[in-house]
Length: 397
Image (cartoon, rainbow, N blue to C red; front, side, top):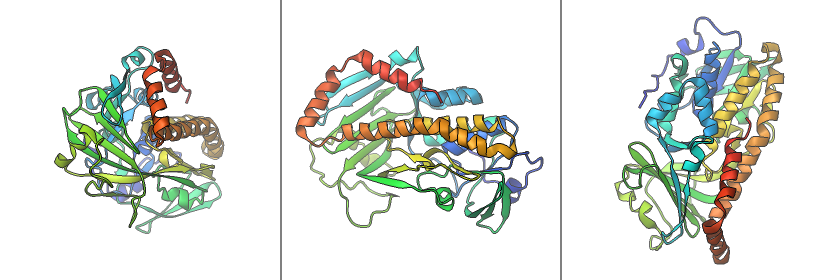
């Protein structure tokens, strides 16, 4: 794995020599934040990037990158590095609740037109993004305590008491964005009543290049192959009761361990070093901008992970934000932000809706509805599916 850079001392990160003409703070060193930082650094800017985490390590699960996200890596000169740390998905295999194959989708058909989706551990993708243009310093264990807009600048107080003025603050700090809260941007949350568990299994539990998914009764199970491991996911619809934070770690707690449709994915659990979980929430933000503060990635729109488009969508948005910023001077950043939102909100809203509908389609409870779904999946015309995937992968950003 490409090593992420060590934590930089705050004096270096906040007072680097040769300050760029545009003072940009990126809150969040995840996929959206590091993609934007890489694009800005490609133009000679030096944004300040902070994150509250203490280290990156190997935490996180697998990420699927679709061709729209891959194009951003091409533009950054990172494609070869990404190839070295990822694997292509050649086939998508859907099973019914009993483990029988409903349909195998041959993704090789996409290769000539758009390229294949590729899978990598999240930590690997972050390392690739951070390595761009000589590397992006990320100031870890750093938090914004307060933001205050003063004219065309944002005055930021950090948790160590320092204050700095920025021309632009980008909130790329995820679903639970504090930037969104501090900017007082309205947020709507939709809880699906689904809990998602994930863990890593040994390589070889699924054939290389094949994504396997089981659509069971009120549960979905998936296995994503990477170069050296397989990422396993189980989502269950239900009420779990008790103290229920939004995420955590711990042992697998199925409500009914005697279920007969658990399948081979759950049989990898005893060998897992760690099991993580979270409750699935869709976050919608009607307005992404407040003055010189703008939201990016999951902070702007949190999707349920049913379509695997979230990382690509975040990278697209980062590229578009940079594309709009390069067209204006510091005095007209507001115009760039307005254009950014106008370009991205329809695309993001459409993908959020698609992910929600697809999730409901996968989680059907009615036996009759599930039977009709399974029949339709078996016999739906392949050309129609290919056209839909083409449209998805060729959406303008």
